[in-house]
Image 1 (cartoon, rainbow, N blue to C red):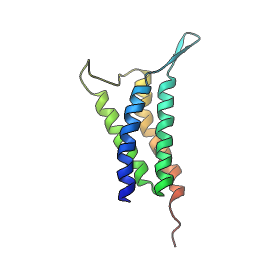
Image 2 (image 1 turned 180 degrees about the vertical axis):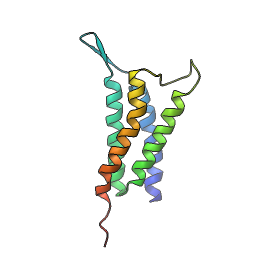
Image 3 (image 1 turned 180 degrees about the horizontal axis):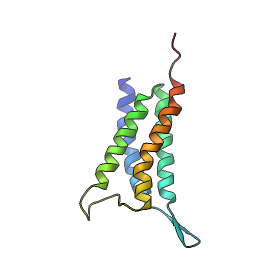
Image 4 (image 1 turned 135 degrees about the vertical axis):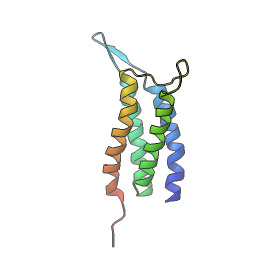
Length: 118
């Protein structure tokens, strides 16, 4: 179990950094900005959490990854102006609140990877 947590922390750091860098990307479609970067960052988070759950056959690494990623993104969104990495626009809100939604969804999904009780 400790190996799963040890793998989840650097994975969460990677997802938090990559997702924060990616979340601000958007495209104009019919004059409306579509935050595709936030959606891509959440897909990345879900993929990493799914990989952790399937590899270690436990929900604990998935939960640890989600908690660490959420804590880092939350911290980066509360820095003072000029240093803030995540602002309170649509993409920022999707990224911050989406972390919790994706993590809860992956926890429910990864329950199926637990070993059978004898």
